[in-house]
Length: 463
Image 1 (cartoon, one colour):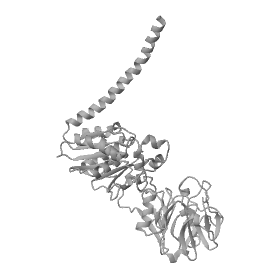
Image 2 (cartoon, one colour; image 1 turned 135 degrees about the vertical axis):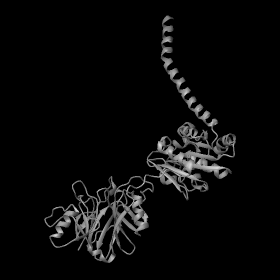
Image 3 (cartoon, helix red, strand yellow; image 1 turned 45 degrees about the horizontal axis):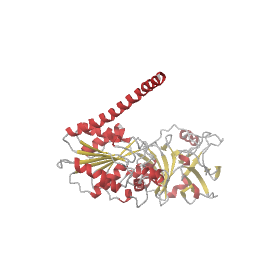
C-alpha cells in the first residue's frame, strides 16, 4: 500500500508541470483573444472583417487583428470550419451571421482583409450581398485564378477528403468557383508572396487589377511579415500600397540598344580565339587585336553562356566552322531553362529558333546557343513571372518581323519577364534570346566603351 501511495504521489509530481504548462497555454490563448476583443469594442473607427485560409483558424489572423485594433478599427475576426463545407454554405451559415450581428454602425465603412481561401470567400460574399458602405479589400495570397496546389490536392484520394469540398472550388479548372466569380467592382489590393509554393503570384491577380504588392515571403505565414502588415495598413488608409524605393539614378535609361538592320547582317562577326588559337576573352583585347590590322570596333557584346573550362556550353559556329555541337541535355541554370534557343546568321538571313527545331546547315555562317528564349513567335517564355524579384543585369538579342537584329542590355537589374516585355513591346521583336546575366557588357564606339569582363564568345561589328 505504501508503495502504491508513493507511486501515485510521484505521478502527480510528474503531471504537475504538464498541467501547469497547459493552464498557461489556455491562459495565453484567452489573453490574446480578450485583448483583441477589448481593444475592438473600445474603438469607434471603421470595421474590418478578417477571414483566414483553408485549414487555419482565426488565430492565424491575430497579427493583423492586433495591428488594426491598435489603429482604431473595430475588428471582426471570423473563424469558420473551412474544411467542412462548400464556400457557398460557409458564407450562408458561418460568415454572414456574425457580420450581420457585429456590423451595427452602418455609418462606418466595413473593410475586409483575407488570407488565401478567405479571399475567395469574401469575393463570393460581396458578389451576393449588397454592402452599402463597403470600404476596401486587401487579399493576401488569394487563389483568384485557382491554385496548382489545389489541383494536386483535389486529385489526391488522401488529401481531398481531409480538405473538404472547398478545395475543389479553388482549382485552376475553368468551372471552379474561383474562376467563375465576377471581377471585383470595389477597391481591392492584392499582396502575393514571391516564394509562395501554394499560390503562384500570377494566379493571385484579378481583371483590371490596379494595386499589387509582392513580398519576399511564402504562403503560410505571409500575414506575420512586417512589410505585409505595413502594406495592409497603408491600403486601408490610403487605397494604395507603399511606394517602392526610388531609382537612385533616374537619369540613366533602363536599357541600351544597338540595332543592326537586316541588310547589314553580314557585318556581324563572332570572335572566340585569335590567329594563334588563344582565347580573346575580353572586348578590350579584341579592340587591340583588330587595331593592328587597321580596323576599329564599332559594336560588341558577349555572346552566350560558357562552362567552367571557358568553352561554349552549347552550339557555337564561327565563320562556318562548328566548334561545339548543339547541347540538348537537361541541367540546372538559365541555359537549361526550356525552351532555350539558337541565334544564327547566313548570307541571306538571320534568326532565332527553338533548339528543338534547329537543323544544322552548311549555309550557317555564325551561330550560338543560349537560354532561355525570351520570346518565341511573340510569346513570353512560360516560366517567366510578371512579379519576379529575381533581377540582374541582362543582355540579349531580338529579331523583328523585318529581320532587324536588336542587341540590348539592361542598365539596372531586371527580371526575365521585364526583359522579354521590353523586347516585345518596346522594340517590336517577335523572337528574342537571353545571352547572359550579371557579367554582361555592351560596347558602342564613342558612346559606351568601358569594359573589363572575360567571355568566351564575343559578337562584334568592325569598321
